[in-house]
Image 1 (cartoon, rainbow over the protein chains, first blue to last red):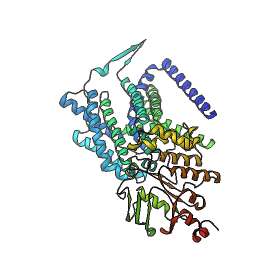
Image 2: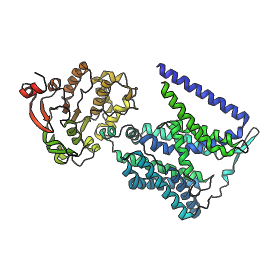
Image 3: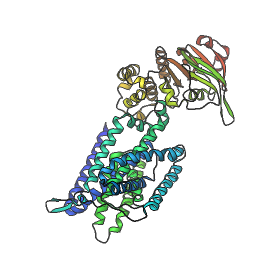
Image 4: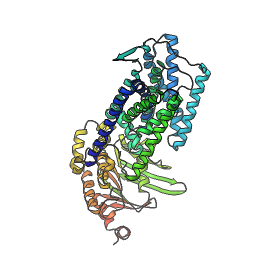
Length: 311
Length: 233
């Protein structure tokens, strides 16, 4: 009980501090705050499917960003040939990438599950390279982007005028977080995934088909990231190496949040997005934005290791 | 119900099961033997965690040899493993529910099965929200048994249930095992021959991977070899 109360106090403190920072930012650099929430929303949104497979069932997928990039190409070409809007293309992308995910799992990941993690890293790194080079061969390195008028819609709040569309990422990240949490807590497959992640042998012994669970969770994750790729395309151009930075950022976010902790992935994404936007808002110092991600990651991991020593 | 015939298994060159045969009807059966005799290998072979080199295992007339573990469990066998194999970051209640959730035949009876678990181990009822990984060793053992019973198995296999328990709990545990034996068949691997013999009606003594002795409990209790080697008399 005492521990619980202390934990609550810590959380309240954290909440107050973050609220304080938000208020300060709102007064000092409101555009950086808005830009940060939108950017962070996209980071969190892309990281969530990776958190599902890394954090819940423990598969490391370094090809995560490449699947998102392929999802964006899928939506782009579907748009060119059928005139489908990328946001509508998310639905066929979901189906197509579930199949692609299942095929990838059966052909590659399944064979490395029992091997040490390094093998999974090398294997999925290979899958990432195949994905990127495939895109390069098929569609060259030319950035592609559909023309969509609605992404330029703007909003006015008091004296501020800003692009409103990109909040779709922020909202989607929160919606996906809620849906995934419900899925893991309420559905039989979700609970099986948690069980497999915590103890694969124990999962077998309660009658769970663990191979089918790995397959289902992996294809779900790839289906989600494929559909997110379509959403990514509405504001960004797609090119063969568009995905790889997001693999790194998702990986950092998950390491930051603590493996298996989905809500912290989203809050961490917002935090890092805001920090990046803040750095970008100083003219001439924009190049430091990429450093922020890793600086925060190093700081958090250092902080945790000190805490473990004192505890 | 369960018939194991002429099982052979090797770890590398070590011959760990030698032509091992045994059967379990509807009664409680004990498998006794020292460390390294092959007890755990035997129960792992039954549930498909280990694939024996030769021999056969049938349950209700169906061979279990090629069945994946989850199918063996769904066909009515439950194992309480030595290492308990709970889900450490799930609550006690979620662990119990997981015992029935993936067994189609057991899904409907969850409320009754929970009731029965709490009657058997009242301590679990006071800990439903606690994470399984924070329970003491003895409580984890009880939870593992209760989780296995949630599937209403026809055959319950216990692998060294008394391992690491304090003496007072061991006595209590074997009383519970005897109670469970009235509902389902039991196959129990144990080193604590003195106390566990009272909980079963029949037993096998395994030494170096082969059956050395078998018979009804009271016969084993009076056997000279058993008295000398296992009871210290």
